[in-house]
Length: 154
Length: 154
Image 1: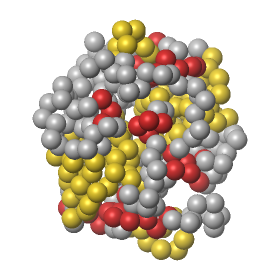
Image 2: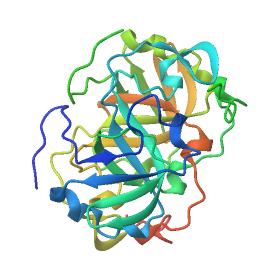
Image 3: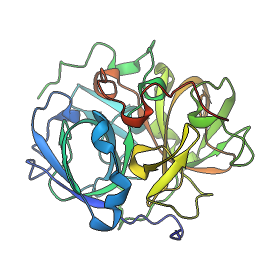
Image 4: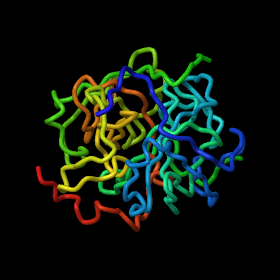
């Protein structure tokens, strides 16, 4: 049993990505076929036992290039200012990134994944199994994003 | 533009929940009809602009009662030891909780939500809009969890 203290995060790995800076990743990665490599540090490798049985995982990471935030922000989808917490902007009070990815292959402590929009060198914080029964809902209202997906300006 | 430093997290709010200790919350909350109140601190309220337009949001929080972890762990679903990162155990190197919830109502800086399995007093770290186009997949493989959901032992 290893102890934890305070609200301080210690990364469990690092993300190796084809995206070398923050202007390059596709918005939200959801259309991307690019492969990223998630390196889980050796000391945590045992926690990956049987993960290759899962086709999709949730990756939580630190937006390490984020340097601040605005509570109202613009997005790629329109010219309006939106409440920050109604967007997936990387510039947040707690700069935590969250992406659902396809687990393509595992080699020891390296996970090859598709659809990850994190940039190269991003600190990895957590990996969780994607479980549709709890992670999926029939959505009724999408707020200001309604009808906008797939219509990015850039 | 407010500055951020290091991998240190500053909560943006606090969760008021009917679950007073960590033995009570339903596993993963996905069947729960209980209402929890998410209090977003006043200084962040502007970031909630128009969030009431969304029926579902992703809540990220700190497992503040988590005091350590094992890389192999048991779950409510069977007696086997599983790789920690193939489970949703709260006992993790980075004790970050993640729950998709239904946004039932908003009153200023208070969000009333259904399906949140966090215990009372949990520090709130982030809120993101739930966007099926990126947060949902047709899953092929569920690993050791295959066929187990809905069959919890407890």
